[in-house]
Length: 172
Image (spheres, helix red, strand yellow):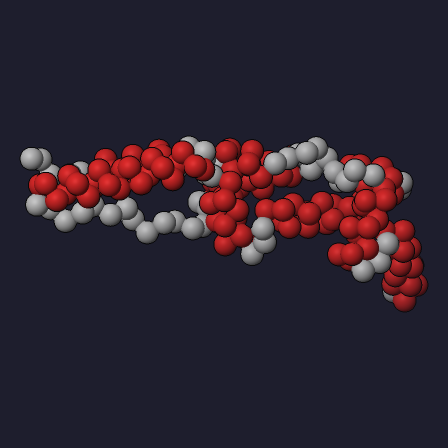
């Protein structure tokens, strides 16, 4: 019998990992068992896949962040982002957290709040408009989330920032 080609085996496993969760696990197990049987029949050592890569590649991280940035004011599922990166949802979430230190959900929320702070400090938009522009359902939801994460309401954050700028300008 011919030698088992590890490149072919690893390529097949990579293709299987793009399948939905339950199908992926089942087919991956079939490939592993097939590899073990072929190896034992040919007298070779079993071909093992390389250690699972946990981090995102640079293009995957860039694509995920671009998607989240461009869809800030719309709904965006983790499954869709994972699919765009050719990964399962769970693998994408683990790898994204390894790369950024935050889950995709937390990173997306932080990005939305950073944009909101920028708009609160630099624009005359209403808090209601800022909440919609940053993807929150309404002003009430935005205020609850902003207050929980930042520690003050958007209105007070804007007021304190304006006072700090005036005080800073007077001391110059």
